[in-house]
Image (cartoon, rainbow, N blue to C red):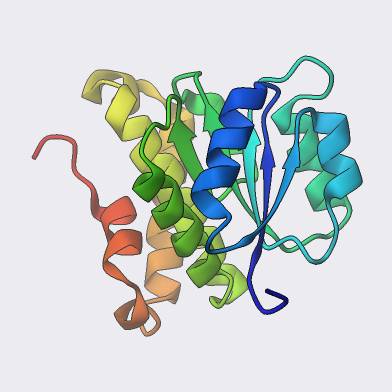
Length: 188
């Protein structure tokens, strides 16, 4: 098991945390935390992926995200939340967004695999994919009118276009899941 990736699952709802752990334990080393404070105790350089609840009573997922960045940890983070994505997600430093309830083990496994694959990409590509995920999350929940009216969304689109231009040579190595996040068109 030492060569397996380590996944930290953080959620204040114990049944959810324990279910995710059961789904992942055959493929990964799994750590669980039932609060943001406990997550910080269990976070170290060995953690590859964090599945992080956004809303927790003691220390929010957003606070934990801030600490991950402050500590310079290189783990990939999937924000897991019952809160529909809104434009405030553009300010958060996460790599994937899962909306609760996540009731499909395959969806969770696929997210972890995608994030582990992303750890092999350079930082510019990681930034591109993080922004693409945020764009896709917003496009699934916001109307075209809301998107068009948002300056933040337009800035996101411009930043993605700039990064896409810089990464054109690298783009041939993206897998289908990563491309789907960027090129998802809700009007299709």
